[in-house]
Image (cartoon, rainbow, N blue to C red):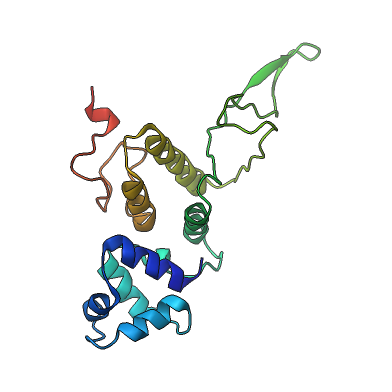
Length: 196
């Protein structure tokens, strides 16, 4: 998804029309056509204007940028936008390390097979997995899985889930264990840890 499409999606999510958004970013009341040009991709906002737009939209500026793939945060934003374009494309799951005994050598070896649930939400064929040898990225994936599970369970709304993604990494909460730097849950949403 390109910058203009992202800009339009988040602007509409925030409930702003083009004329009021143009005023909010300091472009003036007659600049709605320019906002339309940015959203259509006809024009590209400067980095400074993009930063201002992100501040007005209360999102991470990375959520608006085209991905270059040069760092982990950009890759995560790419995954988040792919999920927005293709709901249900990503099914995160936590792999479990399984060990078996090697009777011949009497040593513990790692079983390299990946096991998954055989149910309605899983494909008939074995899914492909991706393991990334990066603690930071694995932590991000773990939190993404956590919030996907919250969405599926109905403990967060689609709007809260989108809010978490466009504010990320400032919305990270270590899987509900701490307060995030940027609030994304609505007041009436109860955290699992508060239910007991």
